[in-house]
Image (cartoon, rainbow, N blue to C red; front, side, top):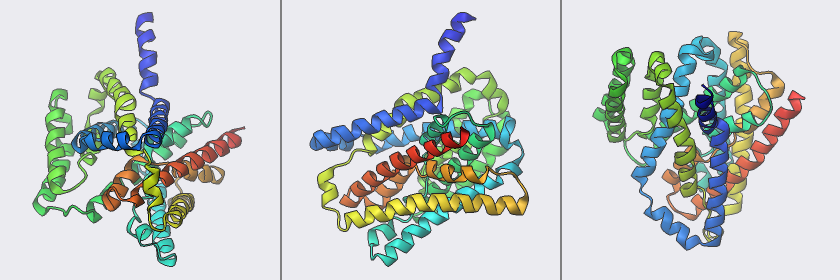
Length: 366
């Protein structure tokens, strides 16, 4: 028993949100240092990294998120679907407010690049948000679940917006196949043996990919549908998978995506104005939208929400984000100088808003 505990404790830490935040942070710092010291070799590394490999790795990340959500839906805080309404409303409010701010500032400031990238500031980084929450002192399960549901909802919403507005047109019959595959997965979930989930995951991933929808999104559906009995019986396997995602997948994505070529930043038209507009849209949109969304639905449904004093730091923490926002930004800007400006801005906002959110939560706890 002692030996089991000795090995299980490091594995539990490796699978925690804290580890995800640490590895993301280390990889981001490494990418910034590498791209600043040797931009040519960094660009060669990014170019040589297969986009398909990154897509597969992000699929594993979204599968782990799906498992976490599935656990909460069957055995956790979200068993009562009504309890998730304030978090879902907060996610929708944050998405609408950030996109609206970007469009408004882009229109008033004559910043077409900011207007085109209205979807970039919408998504929250789940790993960063949960890691920041874990650094803010002891909190109730309800607050963690509120942030988890909020972050996952606006990640999924942002990916759906990307699929519907992206450069790749949707293919009608494959979209129907993807929707049918999701419905079938939900219906037969209790009759699929553990070994067969790989076949289900590959089939659904292929339908999403062929439909023109971001393929990793399919993994959230599969992860949520794994029955509770299989999650319990295979807890060690799933925990090892989560640890692998935290140690390998997330840092590799950050290493590829978060480097900044500063010479490219200097060539961006209206680069400073775009950066300021994006930062305001990201921070103000999340704080105002999340707070308003949670308050409005809570008053209409009488479902409890986090106290008003916690909604501000929650909004700041949910302004952290580089993964899905950068996927959206690359879809809109490609490898242009504006993409480099967006990367630098998102990183700056993530550091500042995260630090402010953690500080306010720790202060409220004391």
